[in-house]
Length: 155
View 1 (tube, one colour):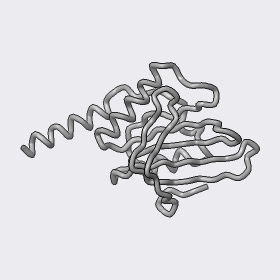
View 2 (tube, one colour):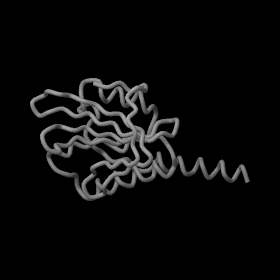
View 3 (cartoon, helix red, strand yellow):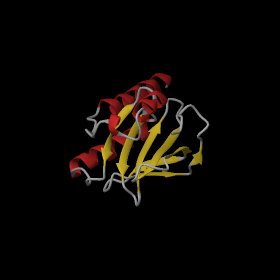
View 4 (cartoon, helix red, strand yellow):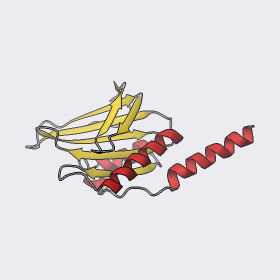
């Protein structure tokens, strides 16, 4: 029984990491200088479901499906992953990242800066659930609690 569970876990994790990963923009263009590196250090080795700049519009349907499937597989498998977007909700640029760290915690990290470059803020939250809207690629997180005292710094 234990061997069956071990083999099942290995197969599930390998499926989550070996499936085709979506191709987005470079993480280095996200947030502020050093933001992408801080996400990498925080999450550690992880499935990369992509980073997408949504200000110019949403990617093709096939790419949106890949992103949604990638995040869904990682969540189901319980493996570390990261996914992020940059968008213009109203009057600021928002970089939003959802991730699972090696300890199993789900995170939503938001870096927000006004269009004129002022009033930069960052929120780091642990969440009960995270997801991606398959039509818009906008992230969603539920049951979140502020956790900015942890190892991920704030800007």
